[in-house]
Every structure is written in C-alpha cells, then in structure tokens.
Length: 83
Image (cartoon, rainbow, N blue to C red; front, side, top):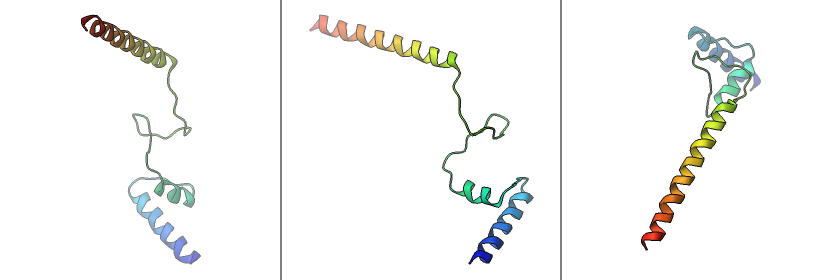
C-alpha cells in the first residue's frame, strides 16, 4: 500500500512540475489537496500563511459602521415621531 501511495504521489508531483509548480515536500501535495480556500497576494505568491489587516482599514470600517448606526438611529427616530 505504501508503494502505491508513493508512486501515485510521485506521478502527481511530476504532473504538477510540468505545469510549473515547485514542491519541496511530497506531503505538501497531500496537504494542498485538503484545502478549501487558498489565499495569495496579487502576484500569486504564498508567504507566511498569515492574513493581516491594516490598522487604517479597521479605523475606516469602524467609522463606516458608526455612520450606519447613526443613520439607522435617525431613521428610527423619524418613524417614532411619525407614529
């Protein structure tokens, strides 16, 4: 069974190399087969396996949420005044 798995992995590695993929470990092929989402940057490189969010982006999102909350609260107040 181990021989069949090793040969199958080697064939898969060879096919990936024909498409330009570079694998350093045979287990990397098996690990990649089990992923659902692959994240990469705009030039399609994989880096530290971590996603980060810039602090300024968080501040902008918080400000937008604040404006949405204020807007919705003002709309609710208008509805109560009309009733």
